[in-house]
Length: 552
Image 1 (cartoon, helix red, strand yellow):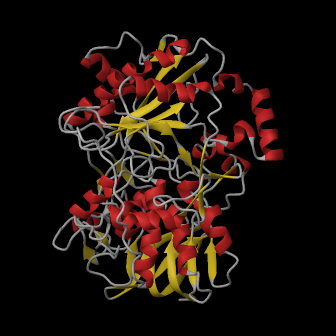
Image 2: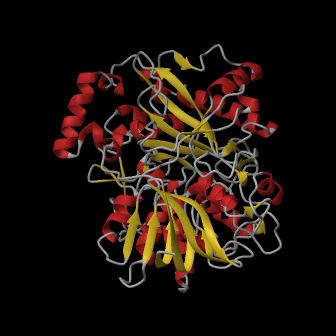
Image 3: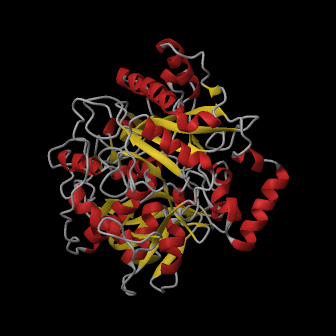
């Protein structure tokens, strides 16, 4: 092998950037990061309001699509994954949601010892600097900056008030003790710029001589001596390279590419590997299984008052917004526009929120692909804990060929019941007095869509991924045959190899995944370095006292 480093990290995404910083922090430990994408130096990445552009760019997105989804009319669902420094944190919606404390209690119950809320909260705090100030729950010294929007548009607070009128609580900070309720939404924006993990962690760390970042490097396979990972073979510019890892290889390629890389390296379900002519090094049936995601739809309303972002969608207005952002890093270009939100329970008997809301004062698709022809607003709404499970499989042993992604969306009947509840509960909120001055006709799904059958038809045609794939190399307890990783993120049965990204999650969290992925990497870095863990928190968290008998 031509070069050697203490650690080789595959992927400079949400987790990989964190690891690059933390593992190289002593200035002595040598670290190489391999990233297939290139630079994030683009106004469309750095300007928050331009988020739909990199999300739809082949330069910055792997452009993955699912296999035809049987229960969604055979639709192939766009599955954006960042192909750039910062990974998906450079193309996402910048929404900052840690998840519900009960998510992490569940991780522990599923065999991820040491990943309960008490043990993960200190790592959320270590990662974060909250613009509004830290407290016992929120950090004020971390690299990742978060802030609330300015909520200048009256629709943001009207949505929160309408939810209160419908009987739901208002929460001051859903990332602290109480997630359930409605209020302001956090975003990873700092001084008007997208605050990706590339900006927060990687770029400051790149000043160190012991950290090297190799872009446009496609990892082909992990190299082994016996059962120990010793390096990575990768392609760069059509030339094959090999690099040695003296201590560990760390795969941080995300929920699609991490299982694909493990499989190409001989780690995964034996029958699948053999079918593609790959020598089986270690039969690990869980690699690529347990794929989870969040689905959502947009409930869109016409607004009779010309106060929505529709006024800012013409070419001249966009040009002026861009010019102001370039000059001052403020204005409508400096926000993701998701500035209020909510988390609720769909029915009595659900112990903690299973529905999430993003509110937007514009009627438009998340990826910008379609927009209503009038003033309007919408709630993005969807269930948090779908029972459907999918997988990621290889099409061939060729690293240049995209893997096959099967979500099996809506394959469980409970998922349909939860989605119908989303439609009806949202309509109830939108019908409250606080929103009546702004309420025109329902654009989508349309007031005529009322029966279960009509709602199901709408859902099959219109639900979209929230772009939260996860859980495909999950950690779990000893003796769990489907657990790929142990609770220290080591690949079971091997040495010198870990997976540290959202694929390691045992189960998807309640909300957007960037924040828990960063936390996972922060804690993972301490495991890799063999440090003691941060002391666990003894702080309480809130859940509804009446959850067994009441929906709100």
